[in-house]
Every structure is written in structure tokens, then in C-alpha cells.
Image (cartoon, rainbow, N blue to C red; front, top):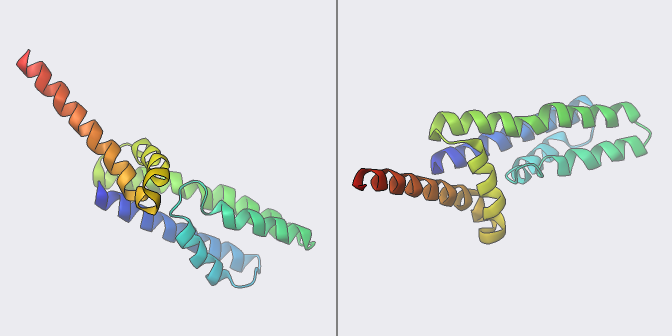
Length: 145
């Protein structure tokens, strides 16, 4: 579970950062590699990370009068960058840890306020551990009855 969570977050963040850098390069936004690296680090926060970068940049491009780039970045972000979090998290958690992605998502949402940045790992681990212990309890209770 730990390996799946850490590897999954790293792969998802890398893909989102690379995809954002590619979109910024295509739409001629300055410093695409820099923004891709920032997105890599901020994408460790699920659902919030990447949109914190591409939504303001699309608004900036539209306000500068570059409507095509602004709408293009926004569409790229919501159609390509944002869904990678959900799709990759599903495949990685199923492949490595054989867990439901909802456990990881809820664990991260609960873990970050409690443990801070370490909640990215400890939140899903605690929920997964609780579910494993509950299953052991249920199985042992049925055996002893």
C-alpha cells in the first residue's frame, strides 16, 4: 500500500507536470519547464494541485487578449491534465496494492489536515489498515461462532 501510494503520487505528479509543460510550450507561455516543475510538486495534492497552475494562466492569457491560448490551456487542463489524476490513480492502486482508489482519495483528504504533508502517505495507510483489521475481525468472529 505504501509503495503504491508513493509511486502513484510520483507518477501522477510527473505526468501532470509534463503535460502542463507541454501545453504551455504549445500555447507559447513563458517558462513552460519551470511551470511544469512547479506543477509536479503541487500535484501531490489531489484534485487541487494542477488546476492551481493552469486555471490562473488561462485567465491571464485571456486578459492579455490571447483568447485562443487561454481557452486552449483551460480545455487542455480539464480534458487532459485533470483526468490523469483519476485514471492513473485507479490503475496504479489496482495494479500495485489491489485497493480501491476511493480509499486513497479519502485517506489523503482526511490525512492532510491531521498529519500535514505526511498525510499523503499516512491517511490512506490508516484507512487501509483499519479495513484490513475489520476484515480480520469479521472473519475470526465467524469462525469462532
